[in-house]
Length: 115
Picture 1 (cartoon, rainbow, N blue to C red):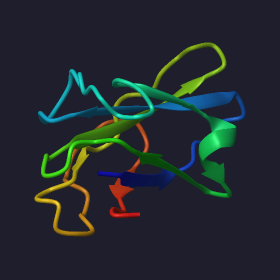
Picture 2: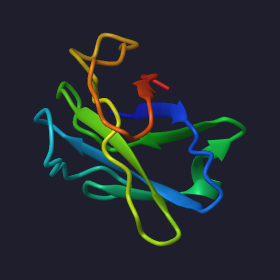
Picture 3: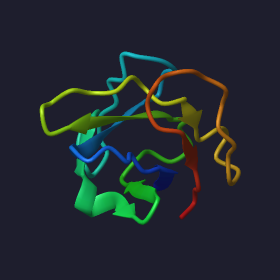
């Protein structure tokens, strides 16, 4: 299964990248394993995900018929990392999902799967 996440891009000048956390259990710590991009967290660079004011990344290689929970953080060139974004889940795998409510000082994300 593939899940595409999209979020508002970080606008700070010293931004370096994002970390995509995932797991089959809700909430941190996110210890997901098995995605093609790597175990949780998946480290992605700005150039690989940003286009204008949005960032997008597709997590591939997840198990079919499994519910996954995702959260994103941003980090800067000094290695400082934001808090977790709101958490989203794949739900029952029936189509586009809306973001779950949640806090965090990270990025707002939502799922657009299947891509």
